[in-house]
Image 1 (cartoon, helix red, strand yellow):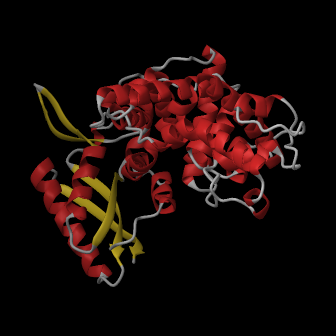
Image 2 (cartoon, rainbow over the protein chains, first blue to last red; image 1 turned 135 degrees about the vertical axis):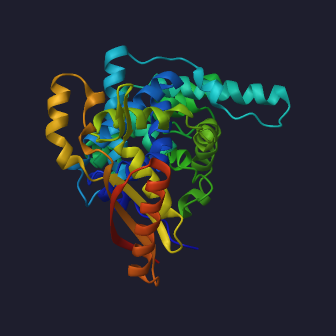
Length: 180
Length: 214
C-alpha cells in the first residue's frame, strides 16, 4: 500500500500558495479542530465557529509555522487559544447540546437514553471546570496527549500542566461521584 | 483506607481528606492511573494493598463515563470544510481569465478553477500520487488586482489575461516511476483538458515533480 503523503509536504505546498494542499490538511485535521472545540465548549454551535476560525487563522499564519513542529500540535495551539478567547468573551456555556452528537446505536431506547444522560453529565462537568484545568483535562484525557505535548501547546511548563490536571481530575471526580 | 486506617469506597471521601492513603500512596497518583485507564496494571505494592485496589476501583468507576465519552466518534459538521474553503478563497488574491468580451458583457473563469481542471487531469495520470495546482499568473495580475481592489471592484480584478493561462502543477509520484515521462504526460493532459473544458487557447503548464512516495 502506498504511504500517506505527510503533513510536512502539504504544509510546504500550502505555504507556496497551493490552496488545495491546505484543503487536504483541513480534510485531515478539521475533525481535530472541531472535536477539541466541542469538548472544551460543550456545544456544537460555538465549536463549529471556533473550528472554522482556527482553520482560517492557521492558513493565514502558515508563513510563521516552524518546519520542525507538527501541524497537529500547532493546530491544537490555535484551537485552544481561539477557545479561550471565546470563553473569556462569553463565559462558559453549560449547554448540553452534545446530546445531539452522540451516534445512534441499535441499543434499546432506555439504555441509549441513559448513555446520553451520562455523556451530558460528563460534558457539563468538563465545561464547568476553570479554563486551564478544562484545557489540560481535554487534551490529556480526551485527546490522549502527554503532559509534555500539553505544555508545548499551552506554552506552559510540565509541572504547571500536572498541577492543572491534578485539580481538574479531583473536581471532575467529585462532581461525577455525586452524580453517580 | 486513608490515614485514619479505615477502608474508604467513596470517591468524595477519598478526595476530601488527606493526600495519602495509610500505606503512603499518593491519592492523585492513583487517580491519574485510573483516569488513564491503567487501573488494572497494578504495581507490586498495589497487588498486596487492599486500600490501593479499593481506591483504584472507585476511581475507575467514576471515570468510566469520561473514558466512554472520549472514545465516542465526533462527526465533523458537513459545512465546516466548505466554510473554511470559502473564507480562504476570499483571502487569496486570484486571477481571472477572460474568455469573451462583447457588448453583452464578459465571461471569465477564475484562476483557481483553471488550476483545479489542471490538477484533476494530473491526478488521473498513472504514477501520480498527488497533484496540486495553482494559477501562476498572479505576478502579472497583481498590479491590476491592487488597483481594482482599491476601487472595491474585485470582480473586475484581472480580466487582463485574455485567453492565456499559466498553471503551476506540483506533483508527487510513486517511487520507481519514470518521472520525466510522468511529468510530460501530466503536462499534455492538463493542456488538453484546459483547452477542452475552459476554452483557453494559450496554455502553459509548468510541472514540478517535488516528491516521490515509496
